[in-house]
Image (cartoon, rainbow, N blue to C red):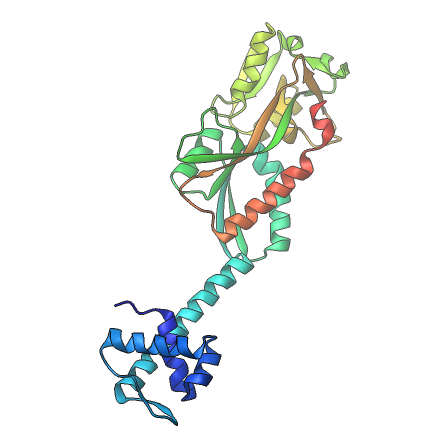
Length: 305
């Protein structure tokens, strides 16, 4: 059967008003269009729904039964559309976002605060993981999207949206010899004891390529999995580290300083990683909107000195 909501609304309107003219006005159709809709409906059903006279229109017995059912269908449909619209408008729901540790610690607090103020009914879970686990969480649908370093290769079924260019700095104790320099060339790291994020992190290869080109060979390299461990080792005086801006110690740190790395200046691209075949829910879209704004605020002109 080819029966549409237009047919149902026309039948309910005629039954309610007892007049084709008034029913046509209520459903925003012309009277001929309404009459045609009722005729089509009766033809599809194979029954007469309304007895018509020159003075009135009245539902037949079967017509009254049909109108009662049609009214329930339309009420349920309108309620469903209203509920979906409310969800989309108010951005309600749960969101899981997977992040590398530097983003989880520095970007997400800003994003969560803004999201809570603007969309109080969005419930966010943040998963702090290394880069390979971050990507896998999205591919396995455990996370709605990820905030991470640009993957070396983006598979065809995935999407990466670049949001920020993050410059690398040297981080060392205040008393270290390199702390006296305004900028530090990569070759100056020759012979240093280097604390690094593990080979599973998104920045590992970015760091070692310029070291190799500069001919700098660290005396020792200690890989760790989390940013907090890097900071802890540096605070104890164990070595130096190469970190992007958003992973640097807090400004005014009592024992650590950071210096831009040069010859060359190096950057990593960070952004959002998601499935191409999975649209973001209204709640996840709300969080993504806020994350973009946070990254935009961080993209200061002097980041590329």
